[in-house]
Image (cartoon, rainbow, N blue to C red; front, side):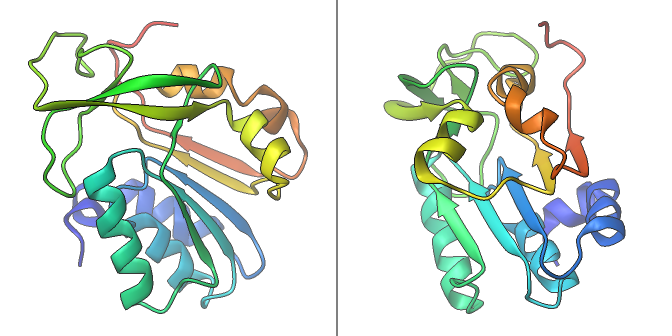
Length: 181
């Protein structure tokens, strides 16, 4: 079982209590896909999952996990960041090891708003969730999980239409107490 699932039992519980066959689940900050696969299993492999992971190394591991599990028809990976604006921005990596987290968008500050020395910096596409849904004609999410180590509020600002959409039944956001909005 994934370390993420052990460390975040409330997220697993939320998924198990909510996701049903035919639902659309957005996993923002998918990492290697642990929660995407919980949703996939709970729905008996019959829901549509969109997994958003900006880190190139972790995205590679996410894609491999999708293929190894035969989930490519239900889990769609996106190597993009989500945020308040649709733009090209920088992703500052704490590590380029797959599965590592605490990277930062825009400036090298961790979720405690402390500067860190990045191991790498690369430009990445960042989208407002509403823009991405409209541009790619994606289905509206029924369930939205956001766990992105510090820019949750910016992502919510970029998802105003989606948050008002009646198709959205529930949202789970991991928020850092140091974040300001």
